[in-house]
Image 1 (cartoon, rainbow, N blue to C red):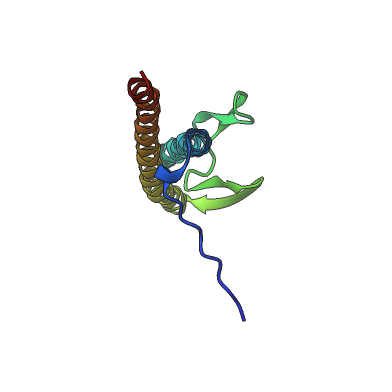
Image 2 (cartoon, rainbow, N blue to C red; image 1 turned 45 degrees about the vertical axis):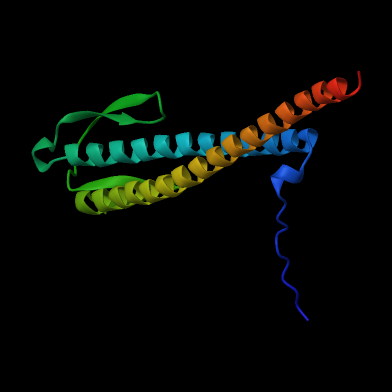
Length: 159
């Protein structure tokens, strides 16, 4: 018999303030991680958009012109554009592929679109997490209000 483990659901109104604070801390950590991931994806998307723009700048009429060739992120050397119909595409983990300009544009455009769809999904997840944090804060405020009223009511009933 295979049993599937169902996630336990706990009503957060049943938790005490210390438990609520721990849940809030966990949610805020998750939210921070997701927000950082979102920023990194936006940066990657921007780089791929820049690659599309760069490929569009390579044109047959530019054959033989002097260009700057990147060796690292900050080191460029002069070179001559000998084959304007083909470009070298970084496909990841140190591998490069020779592609036509059109193929390179399609490749980078597909990357931009893939990241865009991931950003949409991640944005929805971030929004839901933020709503969860806000709800949790409201529950905590209600509990704090109840605790601060309880001692006051107890002192009124015990003259």
